[in-house]
Amino acid sequence: MEKTIYNFSAGPAMLPVEVMKEAQAQFRNFNDMGVSVMELSHRSSEYIAVAKEAEQDLRDLLQVPDNYKILFLQGGGRGQFSALAMNLMGKNANADYIVTGQWSKSAIAEAEKVGKVRVLNGFEGNDNTTPLAHHWDLDPNAAYVHYCVNETVEGVEYPFIPETGEVPLVADMSSTILSRPLDVSKFGLIYAGAQKNIGPSGLAVVIVRDDLLDQACPQTPIVMDYAAMAKADSMVNTPPTYAWYLAGLVFKWLKRQGGLEAMGERNKAKAELFYNYVDNSDFYSNSVHPQARSWMNIPFQLNDDSLNDAFLSQAQAAGLTTLKGHRSVGGMRASIYNAMPIEGVQALVDFMDVFAKQHS
Image 1: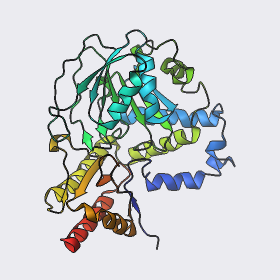
Image 2 (image 1 turned 180 degrees about the vertical axis):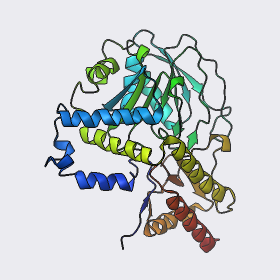
Image 3 (image 1 turned 120 degrees about the vertical axis):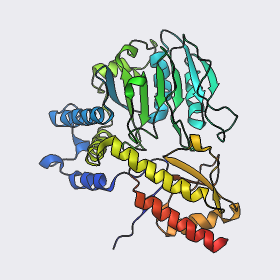
Image 4 (image 1 turned 60 degrees about the vertical axis):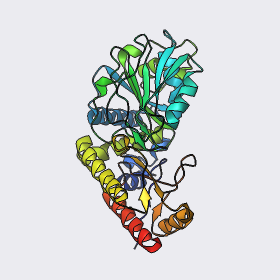
């Protein structure tokens, strides 16, 4: 009997087993064509049907309004740090960035190459142990306000959508998109790297309001130009066709699970299961304030760091992989995206309990 492996990687992350099996079955013979999807021309009617269906399924899941375009682009989430600045700073090279962790800092570094950035602290204090701030001194004339909804390294997540008035709100949703229902109309632009809740790495999804498609800097490369990509159905150049196809399979899987309402309930239950165990443990801890805790990425520490290597080794042997925390934070991190079943979280909690009793 094949051993069950639960992959807690922050990304590239595990994909739904059903999706992997479906892709495997079609790998060499897609729709009885005798070829793989990755061998199809992106201009062929067969592939265009795949692309359009994936886009429509994503539009259905998120209930994307008609005045928004959905783009499937290359370069992952980091590529969009540069692309969004070049696309939105062409007429007004000023933007506000709310800092909550490493990824928002990385986004700022790219935006500063394009225009002037005002940096706003995302917390009431200087670390992620204090409640999130609800109000900032925003520039009413900024081209946009940017924030990262979920910081994978620190395990911090915004529990509310910032109010930015008439200034477009831009959100990096790489690690939280599709994890629960979302009101897309509150945003001017949403972008997400695929390798958490969408599909393989290398692909990025951008959801952009139509009125923001005429703001680009003149030097914006055409493969990063949202307006050009929207006009060409994301096919100015050859897109990441196989990643797009796999994303489409994930969207259909999400629909079969009951959509984002059902996923939200599951993800909340998974996070509560894990946090409740850690909070009631004298052996493990999590330093993020309860108001700011991520549903998707949960860093935790053993109270005795000298046991870290033993914990990781024994977890690996038990089929619980990729639990080492980010090097800047240390400790452990469990990423529990959509594809992680609650059985995987329970297996981790059970292992942690046994390990704690053995070393207490």
